[in-house]
Length: 219
Image (cartoon, rainbow, N blue to C red; front, top):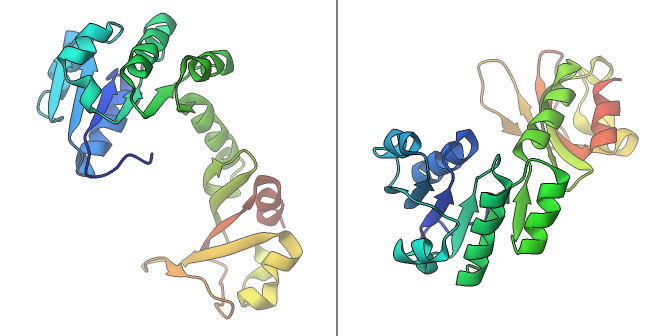
């Protein structure tokens, strides 16, 4: 998220996704106002977040009373209640918030959120599902997709390039992937340069198109 570190963030919906977002923002130094209709969720976060309130976020008057209009960034993490999700986004739009993030469970939900006025729509379950699918094949150790067809991945050094320098392996020329980092057992990741030699037990961090990363990992 591009929320300004110096400004507070409002997180609405403190289920698993919202709780993770809110807690991470707090650890990053943001002040976080958490809002949820479930009193149990509110109790769970009272010692974690800057402020947490039990309230109905679908009512614009309630959000105004909580100072919602003073925020620039809000995260609507309501996933299961479609009506509450949409009405909350609509209330935030009506208040003029310039940076509204919203969680969607389905493509249809996401399209409606966009039309309602959400500036950014995220699909955490879909994203995690894709990530797990790429890791399950056992060639990739970690995988993060972005922009649809591009990704950053962590993988074991493919056997054909073990013992070669990166320039000698011609990873970029032959496979259209860029090796950006190398990890050796017991050492920190190092930034990869052309004359970096990679060994069989190393791990690589590579970037490129998803199909090219998969092809590279399979050589």
